[in-house]
Amino acid sequence: TGVTVLEDNSPFYNYLYLVCVVTGWSGSSATSSNVYIYLNGSWNISESHVLRDPLRRLFEAGAENWFMLTTRHDIGDLISVVVWTDFSGPHPSWYLSSIYVQNMQTNEIWLCPYYGWIGLRHGRGQLRAEVPAYKEKYYASKWKFRIQSKGHNDIRNEHLWFGIVAKTPYNRFTRVRRLTTVLSLLQTCMILNHMYFGVRDKDDPGQFTIIMGQKIHVTSIVIGLQGALIMFFMGVGISTLFK
Picture 1 (cartoon, one colour):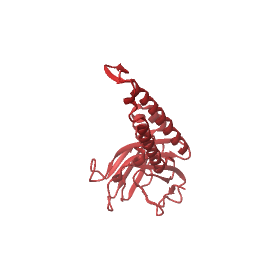
Picture 2 (cartoon, rainbow, N blue to C red; picture 1 turned 90 degrees about the vertical axis):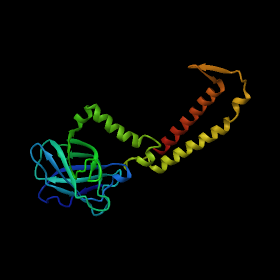
Picture 3 (cartoon, rainbow, N blue to C red; picture 1 turned 60 degrees about the vertical axis):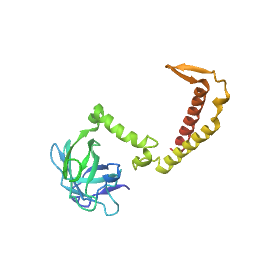
Picture 4 (cartoon, rainbow, N blue to C red; picture 1 turned 30 degrees about the vertical axis):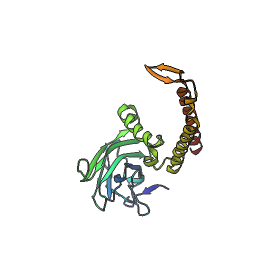
């Protein structure tokens, strides 16, 4: 379920590596090209493999495609992942976000961030990329990588509005639920505006306070706080129910 055992794995090789390839989320990130890969280790390199699955479409926008790759022996610490395409089909360019590799025997994990184009029409105009690999612990210790990875995923999955179009496929807070939530918030905001319409005009026009040099009506502050509290609890309540 979800993991493609590569057709070109040798039946005589039984050393397993789990490989996850993450495609960029924008609509033009997907590719129709055939994608090839091999692992470059400190002891050896793997065979070249074509990442293909006859039962599903691969490398769609925002997709995480998982593959089981076999080698003859342990290739050692992963140094890099070499990936390339044949630049074929109607949409040959491909935006590769990152690659994840796990040694299934030792459970060692490497992260290979790329965040760039592979293709002739975008980026550097190259069809081949060697993506450096970082051990999970080392990657987590580098603030630059942490911020880049966390920001990239959080803004897609945790941002309510942006997540409607950019959420990752594995996130269970679906687009329909997100859209329902934001429409509920907009509806609540409209009701609040209707409730408080003209309230300040009925109050004492002399009830003003000075905040940072600006004259603000006290009733406006109270209405703003009440509206913010209602909107906050409404949003948290709906989001929590859906999650």
